[in-house]
Image (tube, rainbow, N blue to C red; front, side, top):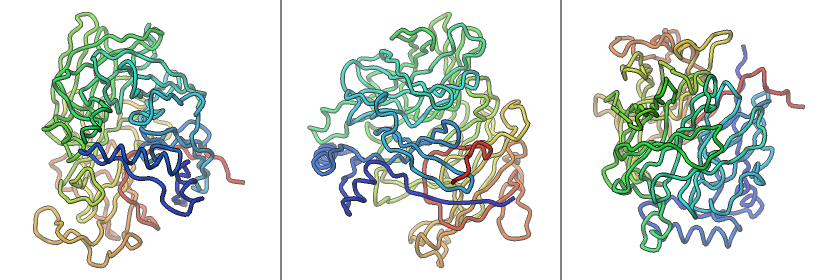
Length: 478
């Protein structure tokens, strides 16, 4: 079948303002570890554009039905997109759901209005995420979109600690068979938010392990503003795999980080590892363990198993950490060169796919269920992985030697080739297999679980998260 490809700017409020002005209006605010630069950017942006932060909408994507999708970032209202069968993308409206989501207590330092990470409950069709305020009582704000992109509702839940923390992700257990309607797993971990730090030229968000760490379970049917909290070892979890309930226990798996300094998780890359927490509602105790010594990022599962006991999860693996990065932080860049299939019960690596030499993974993989399949253990589908070649950059090297990493013929962005790799999740090669490298040269077998490679007409830059929208749901553009 034919493959269509397109790329388009997300026309956020800031985009339209700068387009109309014919010049840049916004200063960047991610200037960690400094704080005065953040204050200056907020002031300048407000004066120039009547908007304290630029709504780049470049972090996550949330499908809401009929080919519609929300482009998300943690500091701004979402922007609604419409995707068509010819692959074209149209911005429908910036600052979507402003009436339901705008809360002055959230601006300008925190969740803005909506998290970039919402999790589906297949049993109800709801999509659930957690944001947080900058001002007032420390709390988590549980946002719920109903089936078909229905207007979101928000519930405020008190945090266990005395400080407001940055909550980037969460997890949910399914409502199916649950008297509580399932749980939302709240991460009150010590990435503390103190806006007053900026007056001392410190970044407003810092890692503060002495503040303690808790994971909370909020019953979705309770309607209460309190959760059941469990003490855990201080850490940072930017991304979760999944959560599920088994009897009196709720089990959470995620990518756990242990920063070495107050701002090291922002300034430099901090490795994350598969970790499991088991919270027992009967005893009030939590046990936890690191399941794997393999560094990972951007974990995903088959979304049909969200909130249930999924056996397998997937993540990309870092190849090297180095720098410098001109537009940091972080001040060190990270290259990802492969994808692994992990057993979420044991931590064992069940399969691995390595990008061909000189190619690197550029964003989160996307799990696509096979047509007509049941989810099984979580490997009945395909993984879509974007890969690209690096630009001509002196000083970087390939694995296993001192040869230059770059291709001398790739001088600028327009020359850089990119590919969409399609991997069969059930057929990923064992990590010890000699067939772990999948060449892209014409006429050679892809192997190692890779079943197709699509050459793209344009370069795909490094990005963050991704989403899958079934073709059958997309409208025809008129």
